[in-house]
Length: 421
Length: 129
Image 1 (cartoon, rainbow over the protein chains, first blue to last red):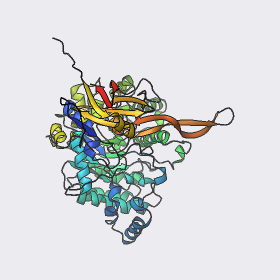
Image 2 (cartoon, rainbow over the protein chains, first blue to last red):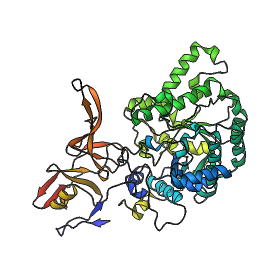
Image 3 (cartoon, helix red, strand yellow):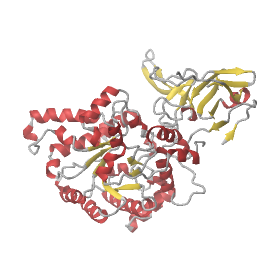
Image 4 (cartoon, rainbow over the protein chains, first blue to last red):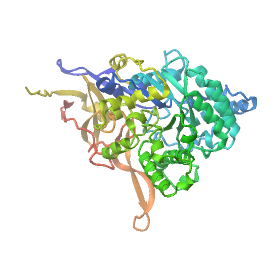
């Protein structure tokens, strides 16, 4: 904090604010969000059901938990020599444009934690939760989001097992406000079954996730036992979408912007279409399906498109007892990245799938296109109750979370660190 | 009864310091603003991005990215390039960019930064807030 020299005796107190970059403290980066919380929603119960305090920053810890001696040795060898935080993974560092040439520093940031006790992941997560005014935050894999496209299924298995151990043994226990989704290595269904059975009673694990950038048909009979186990557990199954520039569908796109805009919705549309047209909601009616990180605009498109086709060709969807849009209105969707350039369209979109009961707030922090809770509180057409539902009460219902306040007052957060860098 | 807004002049920087640093961001008792010196001009903008309210003035200053052209009457793509003089303020929250001198977004001129009245008074940079 710098007090600028001011020449006049009646001059006000002036505090200089530093440039925000990749090493800035989360509380400084998000100080404006904390002020929004103080002014608009400090008394709201808020659950962020999709955040990415990235595991790749601590990748050596995850690799060290691999339960296969050979893969652990290969992973640690890569980690120490040339691959670092990308060891064993199939992401392509040269294709990572999220920071927009360094313009957005919090994407891939390296935040100092001097003087803080405990695991730096947990500290960074707590700073973010406090700064945004969140009661709970659900952390998802980040660098592992593309693992479904890894050509070596057994690598997905060993990394999935190691990540789940790291999540449940290292990351979640220190802070009960942090919750996790179990990573399912979906290319190997029997291992998914084993993991669901192993972690079904874990308090920190509030659901299961399929990192959905993959080519597996979700209606395949190889998943029957897995879905039955998930249904019986009462915990939701979330499909977290992603991008993969190696997918031939996107080979024509020459900018990250273009690929990012289309690819997330692409995978969600494929998986939702297969889920519905193959009548999975009739076969597994109690599974709580959550579709993560594709914004909202694709939802009414797919509803209309599928209804239109099914009405003309019901013989190709014989398991359906209702129109696709009716099933889609019973699923849950997450907000981020919520398209907000046309309020009339957004309002109609939210009405189309009953957002008041089916929409779950997500920040996607610290990714480059994250959304603050104010993206919901400042929507002009939502009722007060709808805002409270979307920001936290719907998630409490889906994930069986208590709704008593967990976060410190926003004013206290600002007093402790008023945004300085 | 109507509320009356009381504005006052505040010295927020020295001209020489601003000229050297190009950008100084300050919090004046709760009002955040960035003052800029670029191309012999002084500008001041509130430190609030019109997108989500991010700390726009605490982001980077970058040359504006332009689409270069080549060949056949300038109809072929020459790839992206940096503008030789135009500079953008980049919001560190989501990358929204604004011209440092006009405050406008490069693709949508209806979106822009909110200006703070600013003047040079001798050696002082004075804003009215």
